[in-house]
Image (tube, rainbow over all chains, first blue to last red; front, side):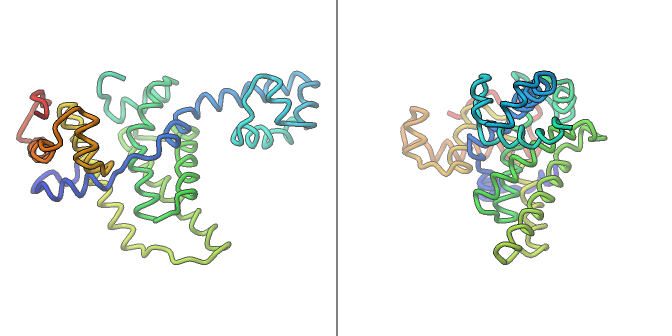
Length: 89
Length: 185
């Protein structure tokens, strides 16, 4: 700890006030990152081996994701879109 | 997670792929990352949200490159600083605005480090004390709201806060060696 001596209660209150909670939705989204990453990996891998799925993704990304059972959130759509060019190679 | 892990233990478990550990790491440092963005760099809420997600995404991707697991806090602080500076520069190209002075930012970062030390000190207090201090100071809730949420008479909140602050001070000053078990009442 950097400064553990000489606190008065007013100072402690000020320091506690300095760290309000981050919005709950932000925290949840960050906590869901690993699962989201796994989802993206799964989609990309399927697109790599399933050419029909790949064609559907290119034609209409959001619809193809929804049809495959994924919720096409902005983050997921952006992440998969970023991977599409490498799948064409 | 039921027991309090050290930062290094937490990082180790995240690296091993434990989902609960990652949840705990985000929870433990979310206020710190958020405060750096909105208080030290005064980012607007939508920019702060992007920085917040970006920092944790980078942390997740690069956790394996962290050489010293005990250094997770300064590492996250640096990731956040870099992301905030990038964001300010991008915004300035679109709409010139005044950046906070470097000395001011440094002073605030130092203060936030101290604030996180104090916040971590809360962990050694009883659940009642943690809750009441967090609600009053960090969440800016009124006596009435706290009283209703915790089913306590509003007239007793001020004295409880004072008592819990005293316990926190004792905790931080090292006068108490063990965790507080006496409760906030």
